[in-house]
Length: 383
Image (cartoon, rainbow, N blue to C red; front, side, top):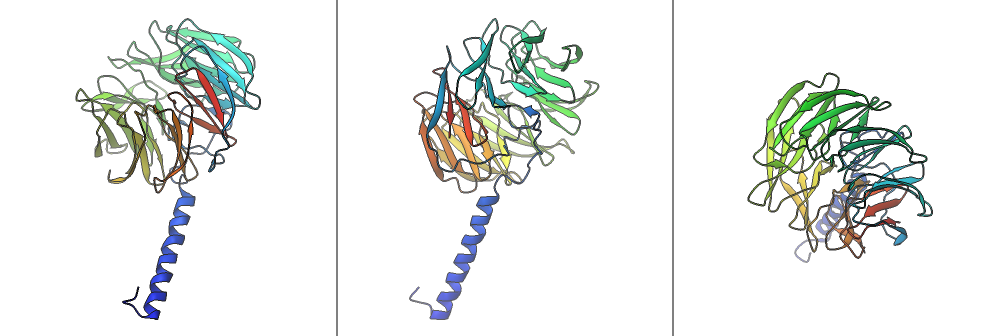
């Protein structure tokens, strides 16, 4: 500063203050772009039918710690769904649980014939989820009574999406199913020829879903007919996310690395490709012109949605299997280093972390509380 006169110093200081103000405004506005209008009657994995990971609620900027915790009999891998002061989630112990969000006490549980990995969706008073026992279930959300079940004869790990009285999901039998949400009647099925382990997304009357052969399929919601497909160089390792006419899709390949694809929904062409140094098994989240994706190398990456250029990366102490979620200008995700992280979505700076004592799965947030499961079978409510 000594090399400049006072006028120049004041001018430089004013510019710095202006840049700081703009930066603060940008940080406050994170999460507003690519926002999808929330449906108050629908709660599902990814926050909306496009699976963008954006949640319209109050962010937790400073954590007060654990509000309550609920113990199950095994690993909680599913992402919870929250509706009407109840949190719903599955466990490796074979049960689907409904727990009161205020007290953390069990309201009911429903026992299936095997592990539950499929994250539930709650719509119009019904909980929908798949089981490793080959059944897709619809339960009364208030008391856990079975409404109907649909058997596919193969494991279902895919998390359903519900839209216009239909529920869509994939199965290890290679099929994508469209089922009547009220009766469980099959409307159509589409065979992909390979395992469909991950979750579908909906965008502009089309269903987007990938399989283990690395193919992304785009299917007409009404007829179940293929509209087009895109072939990747690996195996699809998480469900697609769609925002601003762009599909974001992660794959894993035999070299134990991952790739993030950005594909144009109109031209059906690749826009850009980002190489992840390790495999990725969690869908990205998209907001504020950035796509956030995690890898087994322990990093959360923030990538420019337009050109695929890395904006920042955040290091944890172990692999990340958790899908990130976005609230206002915050990103939340869990790590296998036993921490839940809160990171500024624009800058990548850590805001806080909370030790869970075990590996942390994908979180969800509702009314200022984060709900997240662990590999020790504990569901945490964090405020």
